[in-house]
Image (cartoon, rainbow, N blue to C red; front, side, top):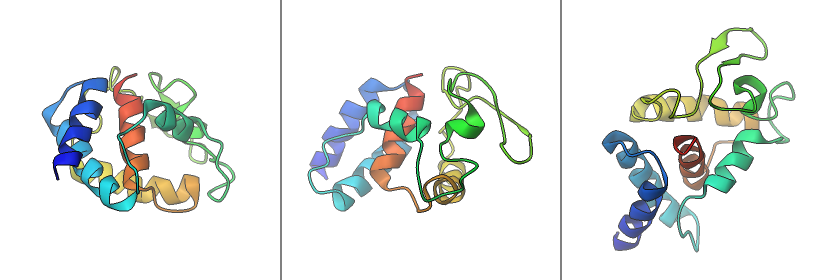
Length: 135
């Protein structure tokens, strides 16, 4: 538990501060400590790779988050199949992004299997949020 708290402090310092987002990152850090041997914290670099892809195993039309959201997460995107507009992913453009835990988890549960072909790990979720909170 103490290790997860230390990891959270390091992760929180690297992203745009918001108590709700910090709580979500803290929960993912505690999960990641249990899931990933040697977990030492979230990485914006890994989060950027996750965002930009490409990934095999998921929907070939959307091999990366950037396929719909665009290469710059500060800009609006467009759903690859429906053409529906999508709000920017970056916290700098959408300050409330990643502050509703239920919504965050719902979107990861839907989008990770679609893009990656599998659920995201807690480390991947934290990396992704860390990247986008710093953009």
